[in-house]
Image 1 (cartoon, rainbow, N blue to C red):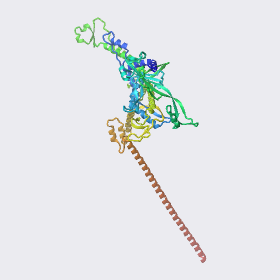
Image 2: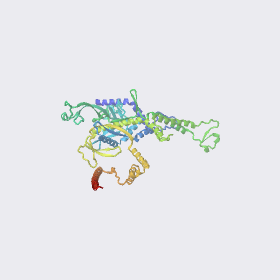
Image 3: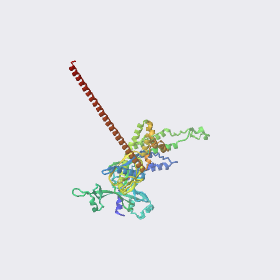
Image 4: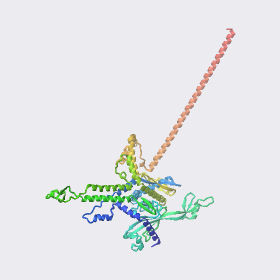
Length: 640
């Protein structure tokens, strides 16, 4: 037995002792959800007491309804993980990372994982899930990322000092399972047999109930790494690289000194142990946190003690009382007389068979007091008060549970429903934080896992799927893949957005289309095929095909090559149209110029004519003047 195994057991013991009270309450919470709600001593007294028949122990289990309402609100709204660029990040690569995470969620059936962990947090105060690396296929060396469930919330023990609701700051964590000795021997044939375990291990709980406890022991380690700034402005880890090879590639300042420094780098390491020895080789991931994510319910600090609980914790007492009062009502009804008449013995003497349904009492004796309906009503009312108490402590009232009330307007009903949503919003916030942590783990692992040239599948927010080539500088587009990205460059952050699921949005869009078509009848002629295609009818596609306007095409059905060809044809047509327009404009300009030239020539000819007319008029005037002068001179000569 190694000293390291002893250290592991000490950490296990510390984590278990610090969370002991919460884990004991968790077990009771989970039992209540499953319907195990009677105290064993009370049940034993009622069912096996000194009486002729056992008393009823009814279980009117309302806990799952309250839990299901909160979980259902979560499932009706989709929380999406979105990657955004930071510093030297690229917007398109950030979108590819977002779509890759969405594809990982789809392949992992992550919505089930999220719902299970969230339901456990609502039920007993904590749930867990994990991010794993697995081989993409049985016959492949490439690995993929998966989001996997941890079905048993009791299987995870956290660092007692971890305060973050998601476990982000945990220095260590255990994920355990119990194995029968035979199964343990088959799984780990080279391990020490359980019968040879150290007695101290039995005391620490690693070997109990004829089972061996096997645990993944995760811890976060910090190591010194040498980083440097390169000529291409990238910062790289050069700890394990040849200095002579690196020197020519480093950026240098005005003093010819490279920019280098020692940095603390965090690694998540894991080893499988049974408390006696390590059962696997160490495994590590270069990420800043353990890849186990915690979903917290509600937590209250009382000094140095933490109390963790979920929706079930304070609904347990009113649930117990309701079960009791309903059982008492059943008990009294079982013991109540079934007689329709009350009579003295002498009144029906000799005719007992005819009055078999009669309560008989002896002459002169006092008639026993029957059970009154007033007592039963009091018990039923007490049970109803317990049901109301459950609504009060959970914050989920009739409107939130789908039970009709006095409200008549949609706004009033919505406000009542919002009261329950606000009361449980803390659970949703913690789940959002957990999903963001999962996104950050995957985002940090993308350069590690997807570090070679390969083809990946990504998924858009409308569930559309496409194939991309990554990390392949020599990529040539083909029929299936026509885009290439380098996922190893840049830094990126993760955020989340919450809204209705794609299916809900599609249904709302379909309803909105129909409403819009009612108010604008012309829309049906122009886009009736799109309205029909958005519906859930069995023959919606056939309706859409028949309603498609002439000449309308469906780009979704075209291959990438056909789409590129159509886009090229559209560009050529647009260029040709522009050239024809320019030619027409030039011809028009020529015609205008020619018209202006002809007009100028006409104006010049007209001007010449007018000048000629003026000269003729001038000559005529001169001739007339000369004639007048000659006539006057002749008159003078003859003495007229």
